[in-house]
Length: 70
Image: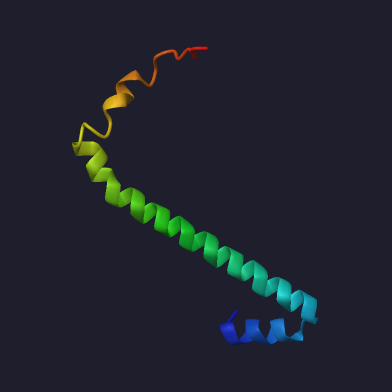
């Protein structure tokens, strides 16, 4: 389906359904953009975590049991 066909179909919908289509489309765009930004940030930091042992020093105790002191 072409974009122009989609727009024509949306324009035939009642107003409430057109608003719903717009809202859901915007939500999906925001969600996708957020995921893209998180992936970019993770990719940028990956090399630091691989090479900088100061950033990962505490991972050596990840599997140790933790007991809360009261």
